[in-house]
Amino acid sequence: MEFDDTQNNDVYEALSWVGLKNTIAWNNLSQAERNNINQSLSDFESNNPNCQ
Image (cartoon, rainbow, N blue to C red; front, side, top):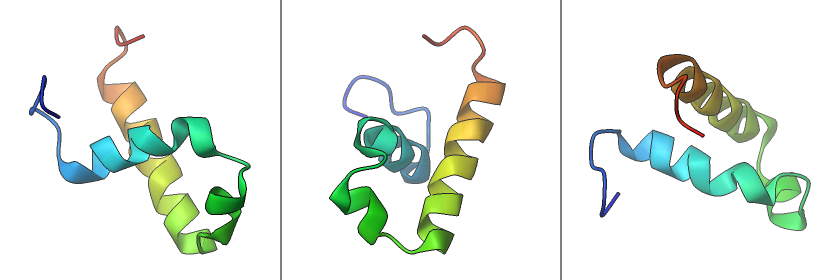
């Protein structure tokens, strides 16, 4: 966010979870929270196809 503030906080939080999926922290989230994160990631990837 310090380098690119064009996204909302939900996107940055979702991106931070990418490497933590299937960890204890991830599994401690509610299913609704995991769904929201996955949806934010999916939306981000759809809207930013050139981002690698």
